[in-house]
Length: 438
Image (cartoon, rainbow, N blue to C red; front, side, top):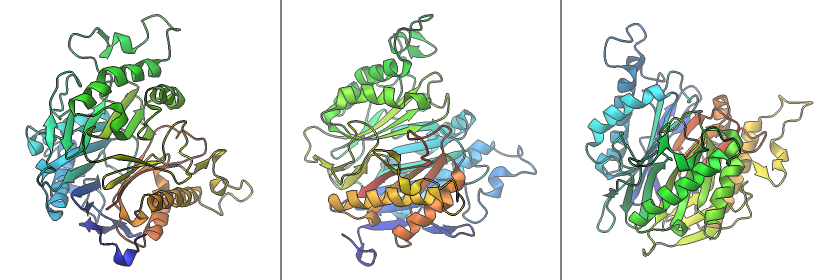
């Protein structure tokens, strides 16, 4: 296991200290041939959101706030990539979180100008609050340092996702890795539809007992969208290594997982199931969106399951998967077979003498450390940390634990408040983590 004094595997990019608490934030991390860009906001790293973005006295005197916000974020993104020795054109994936659908059009407009004709696979999700007041947009990205045999190649196919008005590629390959954009059940031209959803992916109008909506939608997405997308990239369902699922209804967790496990029980990917806002997906009435990382079926990179006796929370969900130089973990909460771990449960007689968020973070990072050790890497090689809070005010407590566990090194985090409960009652923190495994 690597120690902090000898950890030369990853390099923080443009680290800064934020606020009076001196949050040590890595705007990005270079790890071998990869660059992971953390959750970027339109901030100046001193005052929070840059005053010129808000311009409270004259808010409408220049560009709309959303465009100013997006422009500054892209300035930050380009700076991080340049610090790592790369460029925008080498980006293989972006993830966007918004506080409102109103923030989407200005972002997409600026993104077209910055990326040009080849926008990488994208996932856009409406969530709740962010770590800075007045922030409506957060962007994360993954890029590469291209070399022979390891260069981004965009995929095109009209049958993968209809009406991609945002202009991004539905999929992309780099080396043996495959990145598939967030997939919804958006109807395509020629498919019978109602409210932009294919009729086969929803209940028949006026019929209440024709099935479970999220199950119908998930079944459709798997068969008609995911499998064709993977085939186009030279992969199969067995080759998925990391999948993120966003659900608009917190009652849909187990129903979704039932359908997912039925299709991918034998060789499942690391899985993260995350709540998001009602009508917070690309298609207004959609209930689920799924993005994917896979490996090519005939590539040299192989899929290895990592077992450290960590309880993942869902039936047939793996703990982690090692693929090449990346360790993908399923999203983790502070849980065991009895639910929220006893160490994170508040004592009702003395509720203010502990931080349940900090206790949850300790438990989660204990498990991350065990999985890293089992995979032959280290907690200190974390390159992507997505924090999902039911109350964003708990961010500082979680960050304090993470900073201590990472020996003070800058953390490449993104953090949002989710608008619905997490899958396990009492849990208020979920961490979705990737680790470099050189």
